[in-house]
Amino acid sequence: MKLFTTLLTVATLMAGPSLAKMLDVEKDTLTLGFIKLTDMAPLAIAKEKHFFEDEGLYVTLEPQANWKVLLDRVISGELDGAHMLAGQPLAATIGYGTKAHIVTPFAMDLNGNAITVSNAIWAAMKPNVKMGADGRPVHPIGAEALKPVVASYHADGKPFNMGMVFPVSSHNYQLRYWLAAGGLMPGYYGPADTSGQIGADVLLSVTPPPQMPSTLEAGTIYGYCVGEPWNEAAVAKGIGVPVVTSYEIWKNNPEKVFGVTAEFARKYPNTTLALTKALIRAAIWLDEDNGKNRAEAVKILSEPQYVGADASVIANSMTGTFEYEKGDKRALPDFNVFFRYDATYPFYSDAVWYLTQMRRWGQIPQGHDDAWYADEAKAVYKPSIYLQAAKMLVDEGKAKAADFPWNSDGYKPATSDFIDGVSYDGKTPNAYIDSLKIGLKDQQTVADGKVTN
Image (cartoon, rainbow, N blue to C red; front, side, top):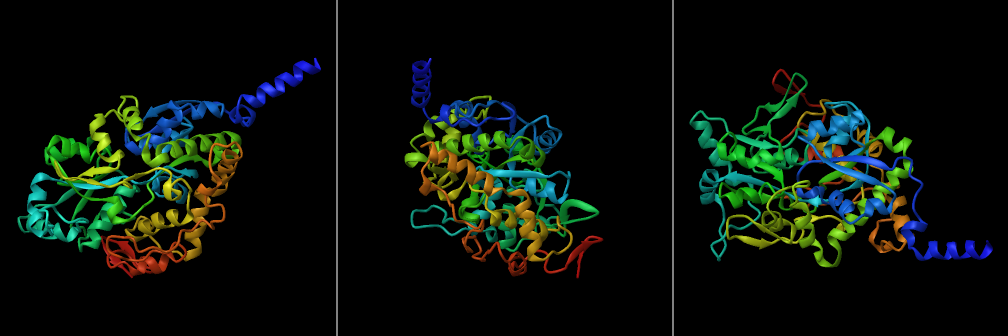
């Protein structure tokens, strides 16, 4: 019996770290939600490469009709967790829209969005765009090039409509940022008017991501901000031109997160850790060795149960390039980042930026001191869970210690890597809000369709 026990112990150790270090998960069968976008890739890879199974998890991935349905199903418990807009856990926790405490132990990616306009709008913009010696447009293209086009629509008595995917999405805030940086007013939200169109030069409305190209083609909107592959799909169909990427609006901007309810994280701490471990491994796989796995990732994402778009369209942005106009394909290696640059660490400063934009446009109706922003960020973003999962992976030989920001206080250094050059420091959100030319300041509020002090 002693010999048998010894042999069993040796066999267990030889079986590898995933068996020897597997967490005792409280819930092993899970359903996770996602929207059909390429940045859901960590979920697909964690499943297809069996990283979930390595952690003792049996996961079903289920596409959702839109972001509201996805959030509601996480809150109700129909979904155990989901690929989420970074603004969703924050908005829910502060009570904008549906009230619920959502937390994120894992940030899913950086960059990945673009702003696309119809062919007709691009033709009208083009005379206002600087051209390079090669005859191609010089990027980034600011909204200054769009401003006279909008003015001509107004002169003809026509509204100028654009689409974004959800009121608390990065797409909404990036589109607003780009418009405002170019001198166009994207509109305010008010307590009695949640359209986001109060005082707007450009009217923004919600369109689900997969419907963006068809809505553009129908002429209902003249442009949109969305994640991939729905910008490149417009290029492939010959109906639109991406004029600026989110990377050009804010270099290495935070994008999606993985969200669970605070109750789920409390009730199933080992399961939450196991999920985080599997997702970190997937992100590493997506970015390792200069993207050697991206072609395989494209093939996986093109399958109908995931994104379901043509592989060549997905590859346009996922393999280190981006095509603006047909034939104008340029190297853009950081368009999709899943692990590099600490992409998966849930930084408080990323959360604070989203809160500043909610305040800037009136979704947060009243001003708050800097401490409030820090407290709300810490209520939602959970780097302690992330680092615990990362340490386990390092101990198991599945990750490198040098790849994680162990000593971070949760705040990135101040940066001015924005299209307008404005500096952002997550530790001084009110000073940042006040530095932006267009948007609410100090204690300003929106009432009766106008800004009041």
